[in-house]
Length: 84
Image (cartoon, rainbow, N blue to C red; front, side, top):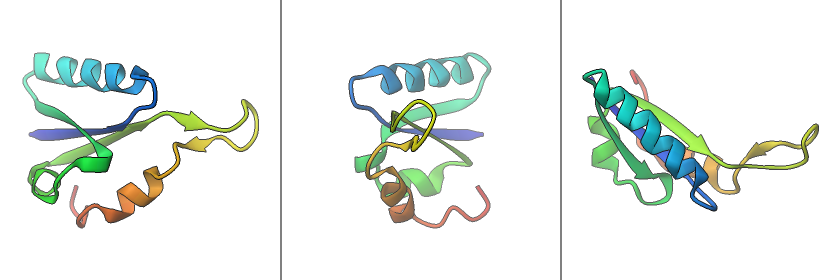
């Protein structure tokens, strides 16, 4: 199985978590890679069997919390995820 971990990071924390998830999956025998959501190429996405998306969040602690700016748009720009 090939897992692609896409991330959007602001200060590097999400990248650290993405790499930790990748390393654990690899330790368990899964072919896992990381790539920034903003610049991942379509071929890399299509080749993956599964996708994980990680992002920093914006908003207040109890209200208005959501993914980082541009993440929803970045996901919408990905090639078809049907069957992933």
